[in-house]
Image 1 (tube, rainbow, N blue to C red):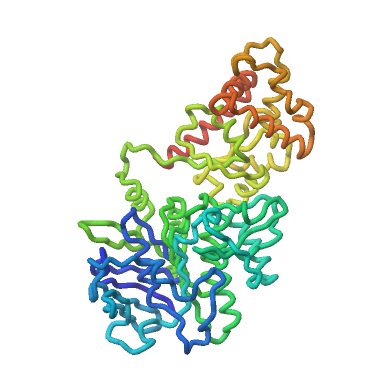
Image 2: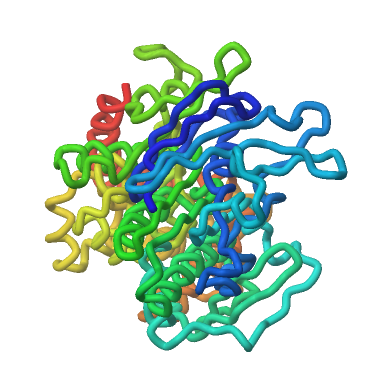
Length: 524
């Protein structure tokens, strides 16, 4: 049951508008106030699983039912949402059209029902549908209570698949492998947690929580397909603000995975977003698929604009038009260009990069996510879009110069920068400071009364330069502990360090300006 298009005769800001849906993926975007969630709601409203359906009583792993809750989609206005003021028609591939209208309830409110029919059970189409509202984004820490439900769990196969999807979407480093996935119930939602050998579900990020919810929805349809082999025909998965809580690279990975599961499970996945990188990737995917007859309708982009008080639907709009409208700017305008995304190994790497680049860092968006050097290089080497030109710049520590394997891979990449030196930046700084005389004026410049003795009092120099993971962690602890004394982005110590490494420093700046110029040409 594939929805090909929806004609909206009237529904709030929509008047005589038609939207075309992708058979697999539909992306809805627009400025705030363009009723994206409303559109998502009216598409999914007509679907349910009635009592005479074999799948009746089945509950999705992600909570709720296979009929999206009315309250998740609509908040009705007693003044403007009146009977007969809403009407829209869904047109299906290989099925009759289905028209919905608003009718009065006995209490004076309205309900949405199939037009021309009042028979019990006739108001809905029989089709499993999941609507993931913004309630899924409520942080677990803000919930009044969170209960672990041991009666619901993933199968061994699902657990294996979950780990694979979780790590791929969030691009998780090789450490912190998932050990358990507890099922969590709270007042606003049900979700799945992640326990590793380093942390448990209480420390899960909002992004992990969001991804877990989406994966549970996919697994719900997978269970239906496996249990009802002869009657399952597919379903609809609607997600409000898909990109929320996720950094750009994860958004792109998730898009590709959603398309894969849409194909495997015969799903129509429809989501709203404001993310430019997600929209750019979706537009590129749509353009690519449109070259072949058999895939031309798989991915569609729907853009909403407010014009003269009404909402106008633009089908299959190009990315440039989306970009200009979301940024409220004109083509070839003098407005400041979008920031270039920068991925680094960790927060300390960001501090060093900003201190070295100073004003040149303007226009860069440093993503505060921890990656290993190896992961970053592999992601770029394997051409994962978000980690390649023209999507991002990658900055890695100087110790990568000691690894021939990684250096060989970097040679073929045009968006990777290596920090000055040939050891980690924290150890490079420690080495520089340790070699300074006790009487060097730099100590007093750091802070009145600050001394070399104080600098290495808590963590000794030998502990900082020690080998292995312990030495690496000591170096980071030492560096972070003195950040309050070292000025903005630690420039009081990093600037003189760079002066001592003049050739490396100048080479880094030269390489940065070369890479940055490519992005400036691209984005204007």
